[in-house]
Image (tube, rainbow, N blue to C red; front, side, top):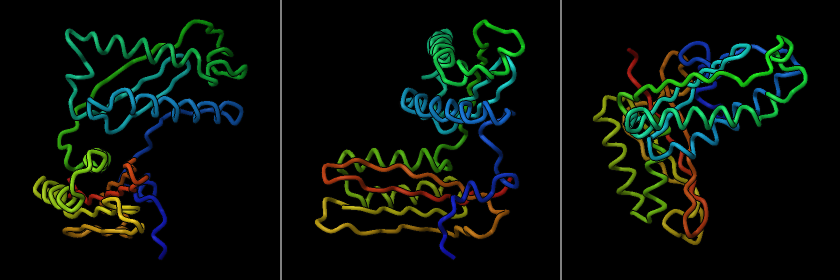
Length: 227
């Protein structure tokens, strides 16, 4: 088995659900997919200090609901909710300039709605950041960029994830690790990570680190205990 499939995509519909929930015909589908991808990319960069782990997007005819899963909700909400209002305006402006909104076949325009799209924003806390593969991979990547010893980073990360209650964790680094002349792969693992068992909740993320020697790939698999 080549093991080339994304563990989360492999389990869509059984363990995990879709991160975009809406319906569109074939004329508007590609624009909305592009909008979702672009919105995620922008929000991931903008809310990185808040520990943004995942974004759920739900669309209706004239409303879009964006749910942010963050490890530090206070950073997003801001003092007296000012951060939320600012973020809502940012998303509204993004939606007005997106290809999906300007599409002549847009469902909103066929319904006679020429006003701005209503944005609903919700913030959900990530209960245990050490069990979220994206946050763990981002943390490892950030430390590699700061030129910390890779073995210590990975061993400490594996220990933290296991002590948080994971069944197993695997971290794979690839590239010019530690500035080596020749690229190589290194794997750090504890517990069990059964990639072929669909009923197991295996979270996966990759976050490449741009070091002075070039990119070092960081891949993280976390097998969580079924609730």
